[in-house]
Every structure is written in C-alpha cells, then in structure tokens.
Length: 174
Image 1 (tube, rainbow, N blue to C red):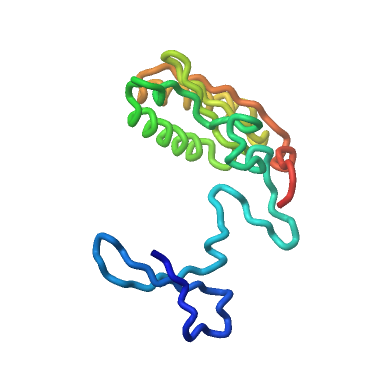
Image 2 (image 1 turned 180 degrees about the vertical axis):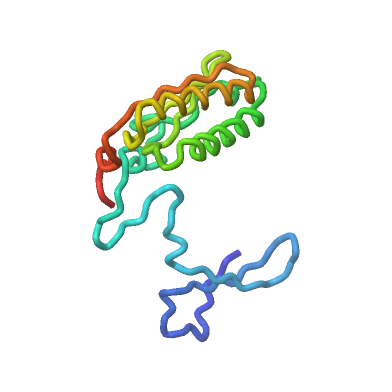
C-alpha cells in the first residue's frame, strides 16, 4: 500500500517523491525516497548528449525491444532451448571468448564480437580496423584459432571483415 505523503512537502517536491509504504512480511512502516531522474532511465538505451557528438553504430542505435526484428543476438547457440545441454558452460565460454578476443585484438575490433555455434564449431566474427600489417593480422587469426581450439576442445574459426577506420562504422551521432 503506497500513500503519497502530502504533509510538509518541500518546495521542490517535483524532484523527489516520498512514499509511505508497509511491507506485508515485516509489518513495519518505512519511507522510500526515489529520484525522478532515476525513474526515467532505461537499460541499454544510450543517453542523448547536448551537442549530439556521441557516435553510435547501427547495432547500438537499435533499441533492445527490436531484437528479432531489425537487431540480432550477439550469440547464436541452441543450448537455451528446451532440454539444452551445457547452458552455464556455454555462457561462461562466451564471456571468456569475449575477454580473450578483446585482450588479444586490443583496440582493433570496431563492432561487437558475434559468436556463432554450429554443431561442434565455434565461429567468431566482427569488424576490424586496418591499422596493423596484414601479416600480423594473419598471425593473430591463426594464434587465436589455435589457442581457443586447444582451450575449448572444439574447432574455432574466425571470420573477420576489415574497415579503413572507426568512422566508417558510425551510423549516427546521439
């Protein structure tokens, strides 16, 4: 039961709302203060800047409610289906893969890493800038595939596309 207290409201009552509520479990009264600016925030939605100078890619610009329509998942696997096996292991493997790739390919990935699992194979794809020599990039691809194949005990393949610089991926400014 929430009742808005109208007694002794400060002059700036629009900034904070004061609720007097009771908990059915504890049977005690407590006061809950919430800030109006915190109530209107939403997860995974970028905030507008005054000068509109914050760059967003196409994937970041799509809101989370559009997943399945104009935006896709960053991880493709079938373990979350009914009677799927190794659910927790696959999630922890995906976290490890992301940290390993972002650590090994330091500041080269421009987009988010997409992880696809097909049968027994793990496919990693994304956009990379052309800031290093192609020979070094081929070495990184081979090194990543070999190390991750040995650690995960499944074949790992990398599908990399290159762009000239980071500004080529910017879709809009927010």
